[in-house]
Length: 306
Image 1 (spheres, one colour):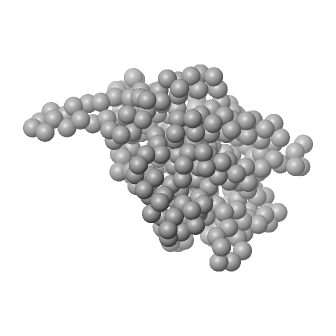
Image 2: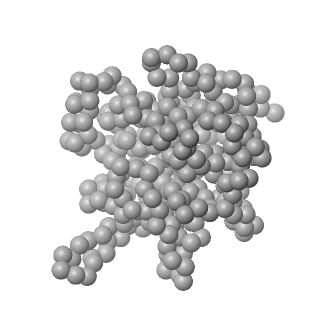
Image 3: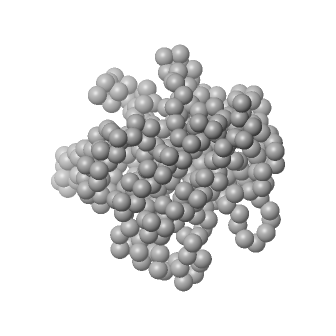
């Protein structure tokens, strides 16, 4: 309540998705507000008991942390209702997020629409833009696999699909050479007027220093990959052996889309034009299987773990 209703104003953010939702961030970066469609509210209420039980059972769950669902009726002639959800900000961090990826495990349309020269630390990159394999320590990789399995089982049981693994990468090196070119992490410190959800402000308040846990503040290695220039899109590129020390933040977002009639029609329509395995709109069972197959290639066990 203090975060949302204090003296500090909420910050409106630009939306990276196609949902048309508005996003707001509290001044302390802890919570995000997202406006919702009526259909999303219905799905959330329907799955609420199962969601609550899942979050209570698995403290390391990677699914979005929801804290409240509200509806406000605006004053005026049309009496419009605004529905919104309050959720945790995945990138509430004392580390600046240099790269962020939205990963589904599908390939059709899964690249950013920005030209290479305009990609920056606020760009939401997608599956075919991913140019790293993240190598987790053995303990964390096993925990990661266990939790992703549990979370995907839960979402599949609730008939949910089209979710993503949102990954934020902080490079510990002062200067990091990306495939896009030279990138100086020092120059990108501080807040920006075009912050995107989910985000970090990059400040170093000692009170905000957080402990290491699954999906938050995780030191690991990122191995640079290169895709072959074949006709077939490669979801995961070939490892180069070039390693970077990074800190990762990640979680499963957009968990309020069920496999309804519109998604079934989208699947049928696109299947005539494209490889059915490459499109996002597939049934929850297939979606879960493909999602796990992909993230277990993007995240791997560090075999040289000490």
